[in-house]
Image (cartoon, rainbow, N blue to C red):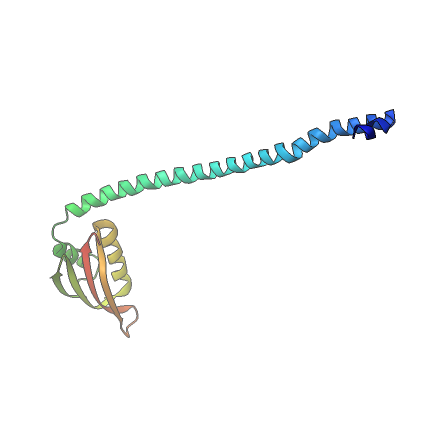
Length: 159
């Protein structure tokens, strides 16, 4: 290599030296600095996105705790499940369709005849969200009349 260098003319040696001075920093930038800075930028964007997600999750957790607390207060003061279900069915326009209410294990079995499907679904949703009463079993039979069903429902607290 040294033999090749000494055989070059003075002008060619200068051109090779200038090329090396320009090429070395350029290679360092292209091979090391640029990929590194791109990766840092990508990671910063990921951190920002995850920070936003974390903030959303923390706010959601606070809302869940707040709602659980308010739901627990309502559930504990409600009396027996039988009376709760009977009174809420009447309040939600299902009193005339409610034909049978009987205890079953930790829950209650209800029989509805010619009940409005939409009213029943809303009522079941309210029981779950406001009273902590869940559906453990549901059987519906569609009737010829539009929007009417016969249904058997088993409800349990906390289900």
